[in-house]
Amino acid sequence: MFTGLITDVGTIDRVQSTDAGREFRIRTSYCDLSAGESIAVGGACLTVREFGDGWFTVAAVLTTLGRTTMGDWEPGRRVNLERALAAGDRLGGHMVQGHVDAVAEVIAVQRLGDALLIDLAIPAELAPLVVLHGSIAVDGVSLTVNAIPDAHTVQLSLIDFTLKATTLGNLRVGHRVQVEADVIGKYVQRLVVPHLAAATE
Image 1 (cartoon, rainbow, N blue to C red):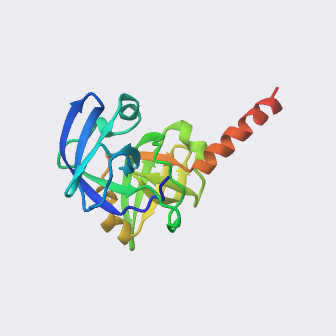
Image 2 (tube, helix red, strand yellow):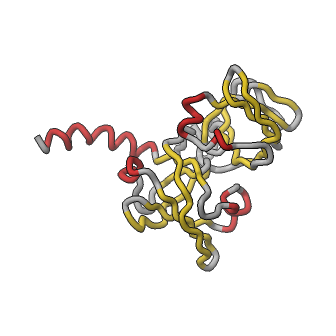
Image 3 (cartoon, rainbow, N blue to C red):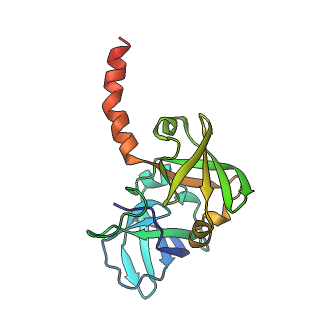
């Protein structure tokens, strides 16, 4: 479990194919990692395989590659990092599982006063899980839905701190991002769907 509050921005310095999947070696400021711990890398929960002074490795299997942008990741890419939530930690963002639901595309970037507005085109299956002023995780960052211009678009409003402390300040039209919908919305949808189906019979 994560909060969507990024604690480091790492840099991929090696990518290779291994028996464990597509492996990434990531440079980081984390200095007390352990093998087997979970880290959200760009919003996807991955397991630390090896680690050393200022680096660690993780691997993405085919299932993960199929629902994320990781198949395109190359050395030099910067990635948002967050270690798993510990008991007693502040929950400053929202409940993030690190289970990427889909990939969205940036379709508009606009500066409005002290904020940067980002419009994302989201897959149709995610639309019912997005609510105005609700929570959404984009590349691992906990964000608030600023507007829903239409059924397939979500608008985010990024503050200065987010732009400086994460990779989202580099977003441009055409960029693809990893999106996780609010887990509470997923459970609600799962619970009500059978009742809605029964009501239409």
